Length: 431
Ligand code: SDX
Image 1 (cartoon, rainbow, N blue to C red):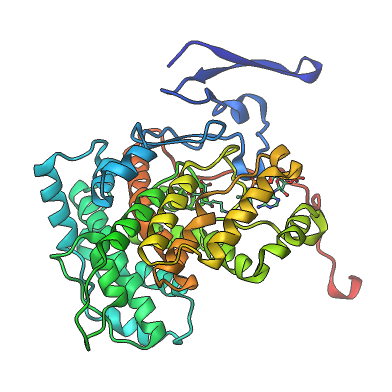
Image 2: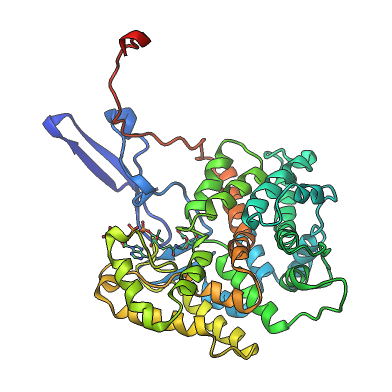
């Protein structure tokens, strides 16, 4: 802890108080205001927590101005090119990339938990066939806690460890089941001989009636999509998981809360919304009309896949996703994909427009991810499930870090009350 201080002087000599300033490894310093209420009777006001650090974390670092994303210090570009998703899972959870022996052990630990309890199948029968897969995922992931009463003691590290393996391993199975249920095809059991991503593709697309051959290029592209979405510091859904976990809720309930938050179109639902937007624009000739709408405050329309709370530069994940787009469309002979060309033209025009330049609105991870997934045959309403599947490891790593942080208490923000002052109830005759 440094001995540097920030001084707060309140009007009319009410108070002059010093608050400690903490420095991290990299990134902004933090003014420690924990004593503010006790010393001044005042609270800070920061809707959306734009200037608030909710915790100390050693997992992910983002530099929004420079467009930098590090997982445990490694640049996302290097991880996406040199590692597979389970290596990145090991890194996020344990702080280091695995050596080959550690990788073998970690991968087999994950892959031996890929099946779900057979009674989980009954949950699906209760959903309509046209239920949104995210609704099914929220329900079934939360329901997992009903099957593991033997390992919900959060103070027991082995309980926390097996829960993390169960969640990372079972969420692809549940996501694939949600898709199969929506198209009326039988569920496909996991095949633990396949890689994590190839297994997910097989559970999604294989049918009992014929042999399924995994396309390695597509499986690798999907693995990269998982890596790019694995964690992202204290975003809305991660903060939801931390807040739920701070009450002592079990990890399955916390991850279900994270999935619910991610579903929003301002967050993880943006990739689905972005593809719907591109379909609505339809043709490059209409791009100008939509750019105009996005700039009109009264339109209520935003360019999905553009802008970010932290990135005021190009989201490094969007660059990697665009490369993956090229690879996948090339592999599938779809280089002239209408939506991909439309997306690139939309990006070009937006990035030349003063409104977007001044507000530092660049494509984010969601801008290209929908195009890649659509090309792979993944339906639009499954995009956010894929995001949730990938982000589960980040949520668990952050949840684990919070549980082990001696400074953490139950999350309980305060408010600036602007409602009615004290008043008496009148009888109904007098109202
Ligand atoms: C994710 O936090 C994370 O890390 C999230 C995420 C992760 O990995 O977990 O990165 C994943 O959620 C990516 C973001 C996906 N969402 C979208 O693509 C939806 C479209 N984007 C916007 O809704 C918006 O950009 C947000 C929600 C992403 C960020 O909102 P902010 O930082 O609160 O920005 P803002 O709403 O205050 O906007 C600043 C200005 C506003 O104009 P003014 O009030 O200053 O005049 O920019 C405008 C906004 O109107 N603006 C946009 C815009 N995004 C912001 N205008 C048009 N189109 C947009 N997309």
